[in-house]
Image (cartoon, rainbow, N blue to C red; front, side, top):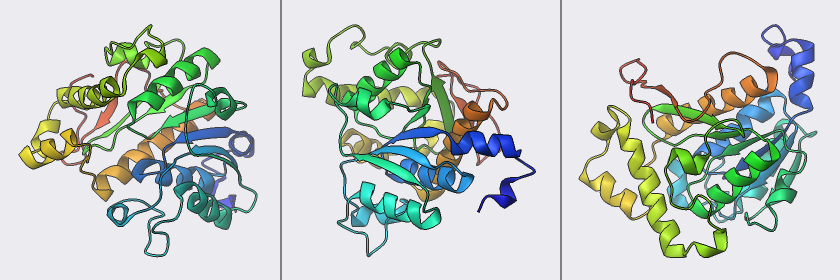
Length: 261
């Protein structure tokens, strides 16, 4: 299956990928594409987390959204497609993240990928990854490609976003606060030079309502960049995009935006 990989990867590097376990949090536009890329790259062990079902509005960008998968659980469909690529794939499925189960989810995980935008689980995941020294890859479905990596040697996700949750118990944070923090985190992304040009009044309104506009070419571009970061970390390739800065790519003007977030 992976014979065409060899030459770009050595046999030893391919075996490293085979022995990797990756956790992917969120199986929407980003997460589904990331899983498929990593399965085809030769990774066979995954922990996947999502409580959602496919719906019609997913058809514009989500790789496993088809008319015959509407109303099916994303974790089940993802597992089925992954095993249809490689029957050796082993997937542990979870429908939610909490302080009670996060250590079980991350048990034996080498690298975690953050592909969701719900703030409570994001904070739980990022805190636990730091404690367990598991690299956490973050990216957003923006018009620009973007990725950054959090470790226990970088500023924390809460520090980078300057969230008021730092040092607080999760139970002390209200659902209303989490909702406000989601909008706040999204608003910080406008600091990337040129990004605001893509978001008119209608887009801003949708973002504030929690319905973030997402367009397949932009989403899939970023999923590819995040997938490559997984492979770079696993194989020690190139330069890792460590927090607090994003690695950014503007595909419309073929340049690297010069604003660091």
